[in-house]
Image (cartoon, rainbow, N blue to C red; front, top):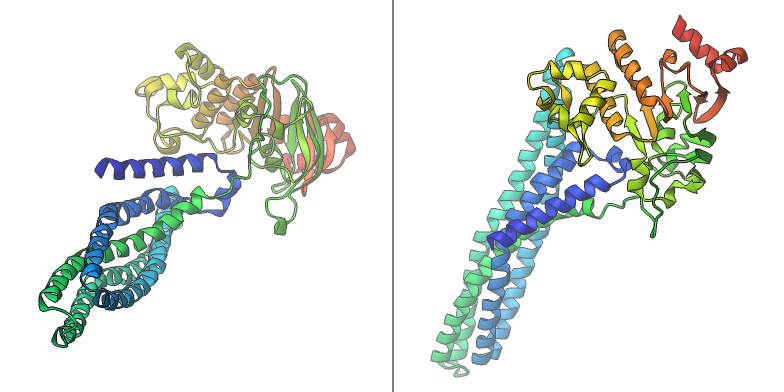
Length: 494
């Protein structure tokens, strides 16, 4: 059973991880990261302990019970019928406790998910927690949930531990009633004493497997609650679907077109983008500017299909992006975001992330273009240096230059830069800006920028507010209009 049990758990974890990788981004804005981590670890472990460990009993014990019942029927149908009624009564009582156990078990798993979420948030935000002297606040928050988890778990374990004495009590009760009923039949001459004693012996063969089965059933009830939480992820609907016989696209030839695009994350919250029309010719640099919440990041997130538009469509070379293979579509794009997202791995592996059969000289060339090579070779093990969790061993500018090196190595025809320099100091910004200009050469670029100095040389600047395009043109044209763009420029100059 061990390889079977472990194989099932391995497959379950693999399915969960695969599902999480392929779910649309909107799903994760609704769910807590810590709770998802709890489901893929603690809930799967609970399934193993509570269900798979007792599979043997679940399959074996009923066979013994069925065999014994057939023998009992052969010996005395009336006594068997009487015992059967008593066993149904016992099952109803135990089943009722089992249902409350499953309900409480679900609460246990939910609380554990909340606990893991608090731990994950605390580890990620230690700098802020310490900076605001919020250790006691976070401690109280954790202790409150931890005590609640202990209280619910204690109730669940009480009910589970009630299974054995309850089944013992029920078994003795059934035997006592059976002895009374059977002895009456023996004394009245309806049943021979030898047959009755044989019947009692066979019935004892039913009691032990029945108790084992009851105990297993309790464990299964506890595991079913964990399985429901696991299935909630496995059954989650993925809104980003690839159509059958989707088209392949290897090269970007002409233009990207946003045609009457309207989009909102939730119907009740209204639209984030309203009737956007935009053409981006191949090789051009387009800049998106505007206040926070104008819809700039949402506009670019629609292009690699992180989300799908509700109305209108986005077209690449005249074909709706929904008709392309998702892998091919995203292969056309390189993304450098405001937050430098790196992994707890070596510098080399972070640069080649997602790519195969990469030559070392290509990695070094990409790092040099990104102004990253000098600081990389100055580290302890050069390109094989581990950068820690989320790259925390490096400075902000160094992390950002690594993400640019990653984009350069991918060599995509379409480049998305989402406020790539906004979190940097002036010196780091200068180095990163030089790397970005090198990266943008001969590419179609969509640049989101708060610092307007970084986008003055864009071929077209799109000014957005409240999900709509207010103005468009190059830097000089927009200044002449003396509109929204000029206000933004004056605010930054001030």
